[in-house]
Image (tube, rainbow, N blue to C red; front, side, top):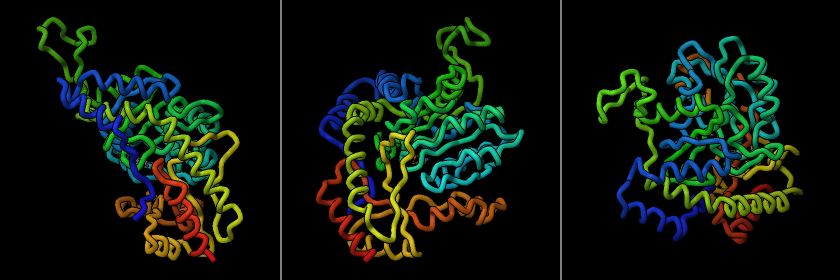
Length: 374
Ligand SMILES: *Cc1c(COP(=O)(O)O)cnc(C)c1O
């Protein structure tokens, strides 16, 4: 089965990992800071804290934002469930706001309508790699006194009004899962310009433990001494995986170029086809496409999915509206809340898109899709 997404691992990646495996530091060593510095080259210099997954990054970002029981977190339902569930784990109530029907990103007007005095965070999702409208969302969070979080699991390397993803929100989260644009097998990161947000993220990643004597409540106990000043977890990304991440980030320009090229090939080949529509691109956005999401009209998405899969083409559906999951249903969330996201989901199909997809394999996807739609 041709997958809808897959990693690209080259000899340089393998060598980078092996070098760390033969060295002294499997974790908490020098590759961690080196990876974070390499990542900051992609966030416009905004510093980053690496963690063990995109989900850990969301959990960490919500902790840094001070999300507590009784707070509200406004986000889009057209996302992987972790965007919402990480906030629920902290006792927050997630308020789902509808999407822009063309881009699939959180709609600023819907976010504004959903905001209340309890809103602690608004989380945008850069669906498929297309950045949300951050200037409009910033107006919403400024008015609400809330923190703007970007779930950029899809959008590393994308740009909004010539500014890089990672520099657009107060906190940005990345995922380095194998289907994503850059991989560390499992991994993620949080980017934040504000040093208080960044150090809160770094503390939570590592048990809430402080080792700098200047920051301790009781310094002078001895060199072994350290203090847990808040509760935290072990979300540390090991050096082995950071080394893979450094190597992958150095290949990101090529990954990005190939994804953009493949998306343009889909655009050209499918522009005239009946029965589907292609992903929108706003003039302010320069996306490093993670997904190529088409919409299949005429109630035929299920049929097209089944027939493409039967032909060995691993199309995917991204995403089931988050509040459709039973865990949200059990909390009282009901279908129909966000009609544009539900309409998007009903028609959505992700076509294969990854750097190793050859022109020939893509042509087969296109031909099969056109044949199914006939
Ligand atoms: C992949 C993804 C996540 C979760 O990342 P993991 O690394 O798989 O934990 C969160 N949000 C979105 C939008 C994602 O695509």
